[in-house]
Image (cartoon, rainbow, N blue to C red; front, side):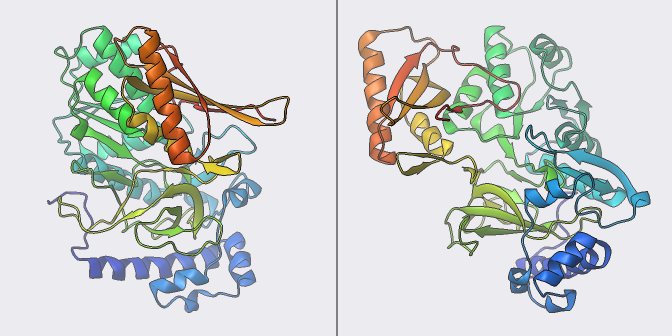
Length: 433
């Protein structure tokens, strides 16, 4: 399919050649203009001239979030201050925020990338796009907004919260595309259902950013909002890597197409930092190809995914990775077993009679033994019933034991009893101290 904002490269060979030139440019640019990178490269005994092939990327040192925090307030800066037109910061709540600076070209490239996302989601200039993510110093709102304007559709920049106004705008402006976190998507879907708005709005698509959404959660959003499952899209986002808009799963949902003409993606084992095998889960490590103000060289994102093999039916040459499966630092250890929230997501998605929301509570008993409790909601419309709740409880406990090799106690609560959030929903509560 032809897109106005798609890559100029039409074959995989052209794309790889473009990546090599971009890699050479980035390494030279960073070495020449960043004291941080020059020192880092010298320590690794690598010079720009050492990069002759794409495989030579493995000669380069890694960059981490610690480097950004230690370089605060202008980490990785590789251009003079007079060329910086904007800064954005992460939404982290611990330590110093990760602040990234942008040149005019960086902002322009980011808008083009995001416009491509709208294209891959099948949007048109006739769409009316309601943006409910946060504005301000965060990248979220500005990314969706700039991309929408570059794409040429009508933007409705309402920001997060105020569900009554959100619903009013859906109806009054006949919004066709809703951009939000998956948690906000669930909130909005429940409001649409509660207020009988399915037939009163023109909503056709939702684009989720900022957090992973389980299949059960997506199905619940679709059922309540009336938006077909195939029109629910995932968009990855990382402040360090421009912000949201660096990829999107097309309507075939065979994985997230990532924009390999703007960055190189490596999948590495989180411990050994060696490449994982085809289709294996690894940590996403990114190197930018065009970023001027704060280029990234082998930046460890801590996000976990895997490269999707084969080609997509949409015909795009852009490679794909799976949905974000979790973060290497989200993992918790329970009775010597490494567990990611995505493991619980999968079990919830395959369980009957329950909704999509859950909480994992970890405690340490007086005996010194760790205990895991899992709270799940009944499916919408189901009332408390002793035997059915017992069956749900035992079924999930059995699945956890079988798949994760640990025991947990499951509590079934009413639909809507667990908290909703317009931002990212907290689901793991580790109270072990």
